[in-house]
Length: 222
Image (cartoon, rainbow, N blue to C red; front, side, top):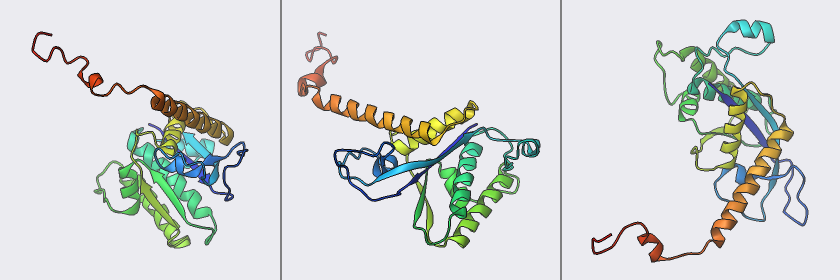
């Protein structure tokens, strides 16, 4: 049904001072949950891609967009599409430019790509899995030991995963997204989460009395 991915690049090593680069985003906040260290290395969102899963090679002939052998619009084909494009970008980078981690919340896409899971020949996604696996092998051949895939849990407010979900939702609707729009969105999301945490920290703690609210009379008369 949908797929989207983003690229985070660490273009410089710096620390927060009084000014933050206008498009700087704390790297650990994009890849981990709940990190608010004021001394974090900043990075930039350098590339975003989102779109609908193509299920017909006719589209490839008409648009030039690559058909990935997806048999239908499903969550799994969307996740594998995003994984394929991330791997393709990784394979096109030069060797010895640094280590790279591709984060995904899809165990299906990760394990199918790396060969940990093996589909049967009659599996509806077998052709797409084979294409994905070829791209993974190409990455390993061109950049041995430099690229790995790491699983992240979904829906626990990991910022980078939230950004990928936002891109996927936009792609499913056919909306194009620029890196500037993605950066603005993730910065807004981070600010909102920070305000929520600050508000929760200021909330009064009622102690044990709060835990008894709604439980009725302890003597059974409520």
